[in-house]
Length: 462
Figure (cartoon, one colour):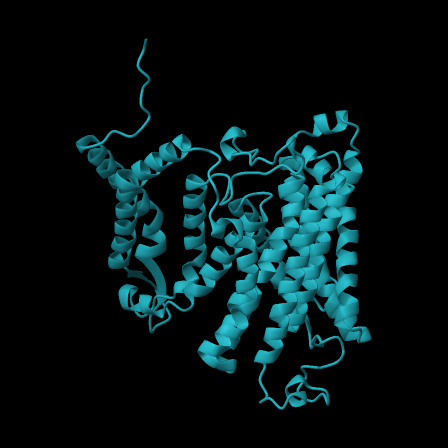
């Protein structure tokens, strides 16, 4: 009887030699990638001449980080992950879940509800403005956008690269109708979602017979068409100047957050005037909208339409053979996903008080799609975690001023956010190719509910 061969990496000197060799190759690749971007910098001298500034020290730091990171990965991290996977596979499958894992969603919602009071207690009312706005509201907007796109991409399996178009439709619908007709936010919020859903159906009709790369190209073109219309239809959208002076939302018409309003919130409760109250109100508003998105998504997944989306994602031909109308299935996925994008867009207009086409470029669609893919397509918790890490991580770069002491006084951390974002995406997709939550739990099950591991599905389809 033949002995089974072990797939674990070789230990000892051979593993160290392999790690050193791959670290050397990583250094060469880093040298080729960063020499023109980091090692050399264009600048102007006092005579307005273009000169090259050499930054070999900074280049050496980048190369050193790449080499050390690759060495640690090959020599220590990869064997540790292989041993951990072997231990996990050998363990009993039906082990009891921990309290944190069982109640993670409830604890996360509780933490989000308590976030503003905790921040106010730690940094004061005015000091909480930055944390509530930049980290709370900003992250929750992308969580809601990710959950909306998850209906199209994660559940129905329709690759949409123009999702930012529905985001723009919702924002401009609120901005133009509120500025022109003075309608209330609570009227325009559902109206913006309805208009975005309408445009989602318009996009759905031309792409009914498309899938894969062709579908991605058409949706990408749709997003660019919407952006160009916003730029060039100056009589309505005011072009690149954007729409400013957008009215603020009120607390159901009872309290206003305008300083000059007689029913101002701070005046009504005898509080000192501060814009932090409005931001806290917006935080709880977007939190409610995000939770509504999650609730509707969960309910839809358990309904026949949700199971039709999942069947369409797995195999469109088999879906047709079961008698499922793929036309209405695709249209409902596009329209419902677009509706939540319209909700997020109207909230974005309320939060900013100003909208312009520059806020709805293709990069926004790419970031939202990356959040869905990295979090795990179809996983609400995974998408929320991915949005918190990606958006919150880029915002944390603005606070890392101590890096100037390492890389020099001219180093600006936020300018490298896309570089770090790209590296992080590569690392995560190598480590967890199916996202942070790679397992999938079917909505229909026989006798008992079981989570399907991503390792049982074909690469790129799970």
